[in-house]
Amino acid sequence: MKRNPVLDYQMYTWLLKSINQISLYEDRLGQESEFNFLRSNSWLGNTAVIDRLIYRKGQFRIDLIFVHHEQPLKLLIRNITVQSDRKKAEIMSQLFRRQAAKDQRGTLIVKEGLLNLSYN
Image (cartoon, rainbow, N blue to C red; front, side, top):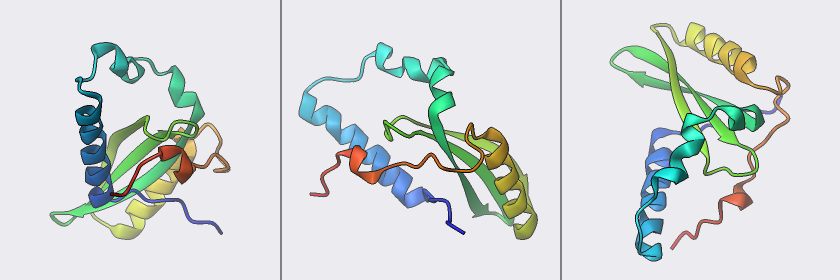
């Protein structure tokens, strides 16, 4: 069975740092209109859903990450719930991911080549 990709905290912070550095090269700050996709939920229909478990202070936090399969930098992270047992948290995260995904079989994938990031 193919495992779902996981976006851990370090990768997420690196991704945010890289996005923030892009504004240095363009010599401009982001405009308010560039964040309209967060207000409109229509793009969520074409997203791959990734579940993420984070262990903090004796509890497992369940997050769902919605990533547009054609524009991977368009992503949204939602905190769902907290569980104290790892096994229950894993089961709940899989159930929430399947329920939230448009394609419940998980055939929508995020292609790394679409990120267009340089690792310099």
